[in-house]
Length: 291
Image (cartoon, rainbow, N blue to C red; front, side, top):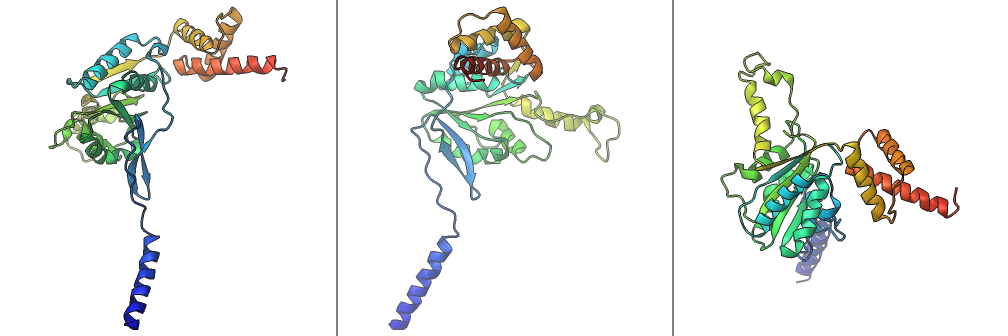
């Protein structure tokens, strides 16, 4: 009996040591949240609630009225349970693509809309994520920001499968909204346009281009965004300055805003927002007597 007790004690000690090397159990998602990020810890992924979501009003997004109307319509169809499309938002940086997705979440959250943000390197987990969401009553946007792929990226095929390329039916309560600076999401090369020319050992190099385009075509709604004109940029500057309490924008301020955009090499909503923060901060610093 004493030998058995010693054996049990040693076994318990060994098990205790082994448990320290095992990954912690994956916590259940906090379904009371409205937004989550997919995070991987010790090789295992789970949904982490976003404690302070970035709320943006649709009214604060300017100069993209047509794109805004389309994504609002598509999202309204989705939250009401009607057929809706996956959405690809492409074009110039800083023109409101990501902000528009965040804004529709705020606009429809009280109707059951939820958002799951997935980084490009974690797209291989999309089937697992969709399986988690399928049984929920809420409606989920899977949000992939700044999306682009190389040919070897494993997330490329995972995204194709989730969009509509699997033998399993897509989930009715999940859509994918993605933003990208590239419309076709993958780089294309001049040699791939040479359908009959020799391109290494590939017999039909043109098929490579078709494969790359096929991912974008799985998004049923394409929304294109363009750089702002000078007047559009200044209008957004005025909007953000008003947000910070500056009602009147004089010629000197407009010139400062244009100079700021030249240093950034772009005119966009993001640059306008950054200028407003810089300008208001400078004014506050000078008014407080700091050099």
